[in-house]
Image 1: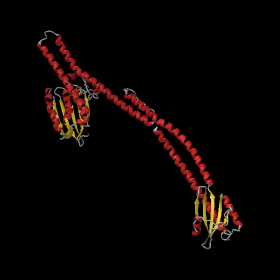
Image 2: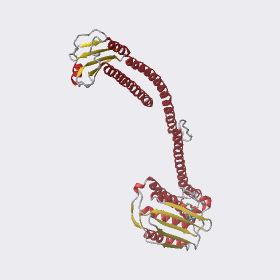
Image 3: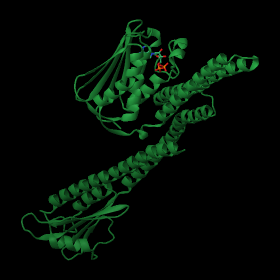
Image 4: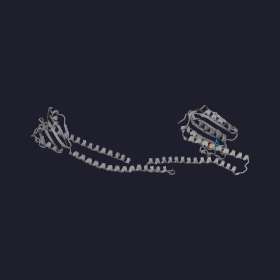
Length: 461
Ligand code: ADP
């Protein structure tokens, strides 16, 4: 409706303005042309008859004929008034001998040079001074009245025609406006309907809005948005089912262990101890999963809980390595720290420490006995770089793109022994993302793995 009104106004206003402008231009042009024509004719007559004195001499009939001719050409009347304001000639013959007192006639006599014009609706009056060529004196006034009826008539005709065309244009514009506004609003309405449909939960449908090019573009963008929502929804569902599965596994084990103790009679003490110690391991595992999940959920919330402060990264890495030294030593794995320069950066100490610990812990966990883990730190003017390489078992090519997924583990059986939850790398990746950094993995099976992390030196909110 709104669009319809706008189109109507846009279509009609110029038409009206152009019509009014054209009619006015015609009128003023026609009037001025006729006026100057009459004036020229008047001057011609004055110049022709004045020198002989015939103009002011009422008895000279040759002049009368000339004046009558001119009066009939211009559908008007011509008077000649002398110095005493007496009418000497009148093509109508009615005013002869009478005195004509009109303001402009008097002025014209006095000034002697200027021509005066009175405009009325249907006629125009011109008062021209009759001045002798030799002397400067004004002998009288030539009063020419001519009709402007023809111009008025023409103007009316033009107006009627303009009105007619205006109506035709208006009908065309209205028609066009209705069709066009339908064309604009129909796709929008159908878009709104489709979106409502999607909102009701039919997320699996592709949408396709038909209409002009922009609408097509919106439908592309919209499909991308739906795709993103769908992906989020899928990952949420997957996450929930993974979480319940992971949490259930230790509980199932504990149940099996407890059941087998309960159903047997006269269980030896050692067996109790062994099973209880297994149950204890499962409790620990359950605890670890819950803790990792809690860290992940906290990281997911938002970057606003990031406690960023200027930190010495060298000290941070040295601290982590010192803490992990005992675990590495158990399997005779060598921890090497290589620092190219002192680095201080704006990071969240607790989260960054968790992220890097996960990487180094993995490098130890998935290593071979007597292997090595090398951690190096470098920086340029914008970023600092941490590289964690190991001599471990490596990650198969096809698994590399999944290792940052939550609960993803390359070898489920082996990681159960090492106590992995499959959440470590997704926590690390989340932390790196919160710091607007990047993380990459390079690995060859049975040769080793390298993780590189790049973090901006100053925090980017
Ligand atoms: P987990 O708790 O199982 O270690 P992560 O998310 O930390 O979970 O790692 C996911 C998987 O990626 C691991 O299960 C492991 O298979 C693989 N992985 C991670 N780091 C390494 C590494 N340094 N060398 C070999 N495999 C690795």
